[in-house]
Length: 398
Image (cartoon, rainbow, N blue to C red; front, side, top):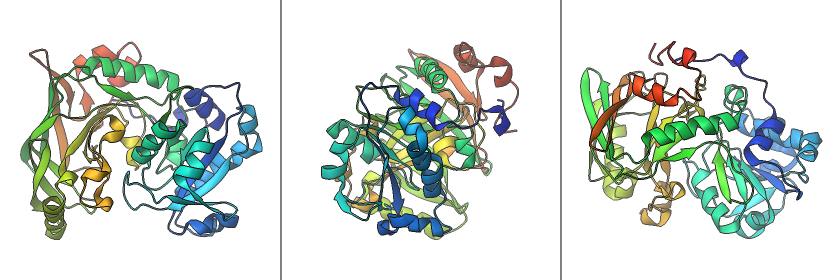
């Protein structure tokens, strides 16, 4: 399908993004921004800005904090935006330590001092805070967003779209997959074929669509644009690519990875994964199957790239923020209680092709995707809200 260029998007507008995603309020809302730092005390006097290692956190200041406090907040009926740092978790969706440092250098308690006292909490970080912040939102009644990994491409594409339209697109995709019994994902890697079956038991499909209206405590993951399921079981196998390019086959039975089988690269990484699976089996539980719904350029960051139409992702680990029952206390180690997306997209997994994805529903089988492109069946069901002349132009695999 068509992969747009940045100049096809409207310039980034923080006011447009926040007013669309969070709506308006007669009550003056109290916002804050959270960032993750190895040393949270360096938030004082913006000391971390002197380092070359914090590009995401610099965006938090330049693209969010300063505009909010220089007029955008007043336009949206927000109070002055506060600014806090917490110690980096080092992993996706791990629970943070319960202390924060304010811009003034005060140390406060995450749950006691922060959560009950803010209406909107925005986490702009290196590592995703979506799962723990969603759990906190439901306990304390705030709304917010997680925007981990923000870069210039994301600001000027995935955060510059009309989320009312994205919501409508996601709903069409959701309705198409709703109440699926199972999906079969077929892969090719290094000339070998693999099949992963993910059972969904006819459950209601869910969507991440960017809208977080008043009255409902929740956390939006931005950029948004995906339809997802919490699997009831899974079986088969699938290829996996480590960050350095090492490849292995993940064997799956009864809803969880049971073993990693070395294919190429650094065998010690595969050995370490098998050790982790033996010591903490919850790390292998398949916690999500997701499909991207947006037409966006690749950003090099999973938070946007997993939202692109034609991509899919499987996730392992905690699923409580998605409506699942795998909570951090069920892991043998706090540091293992993560939710890790395994994204399949040409720039991320060049050695792996998702040759096709089939949906089983009502005793019928439908082709959903083929070679990273939506099937004709899917395109027909999405045509009402998508530019069909663009959808048919290009494949992600081209």
